[in-house]
Image (cartoon, rainbow, N blue to C red):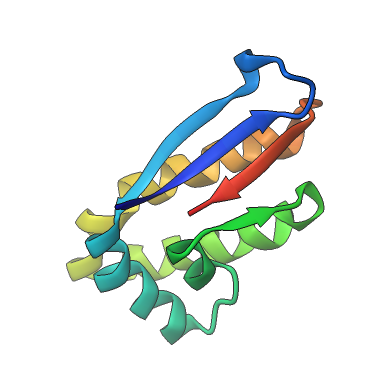
Amino acid sequence: MSVALMTTSRQGDTRSNRLVPVAAQATFKEFWVPAAEALGLQWVPLFETGIPVERSDLPDVILELEALRAWCVSSESHREVILERLERLIDELNKIDSSDDDVEIFIG
């Protein structure tokens, strides 16, 4: 199993459909979840089982991911494992947040 960002068009336009890998399940459980819990994050732990994300929630989700990124930069042991995928996830969510695409968002 793995954690991924999935977007699907509400209008049936498959060009808006995306699947962006975030982490293998074991990696997410071993590194992402403990870091999120240590930071008191609410959204990130929910990605383990999967959750739909409303467009109106994107700013809060992105803020949590940016807090996790800042923590990873300061943590040598977690930097290599998490940072690259975390950067990509933040970039993808920022693109969605600033676009006019009418998409459903699911992370899990």
